[in-house]
Image 1: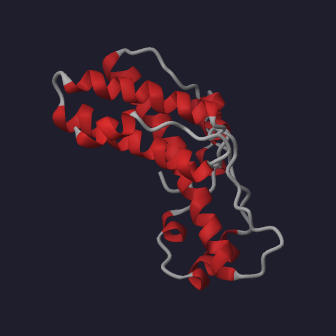
Image 2: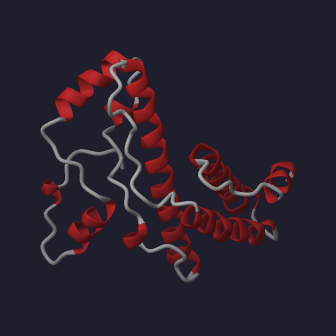
Length: 174
């Protein structure tokens, strides 16, 4: 309850991706807590946080592709940290979309977020996400280099087509 009050006064900051992403992640976690654990009258607070989370993600440009800013850097650790930030961004937006779909399915609440707005690639494979060193991450990147990333909208299109070709989607972390 205290976190909800603190976040209520927090505003998004123009051109501050880390701050805005942390704010969206915080709202997402508080929303899940309100809806799944506290329930009851607190659920309305969770739905209010959901709307605010989507609004912040849209207005601050978090729906756009998050690509690591690794161009020109030769430091493997820096590249790894940037890739982690980009993956965290991607996973946050995809989680927001999935929660939005969940509310539509279970509560018949109109969708706030279309899959067409999500301009992210699918999450990287779990073994790449769970690497503990920059060298392990680089090794996983080399192993994955032959597969092209698939955007979320393309994956949705493939899943709902008449003859879904799930094998056309590279391995990712569902």
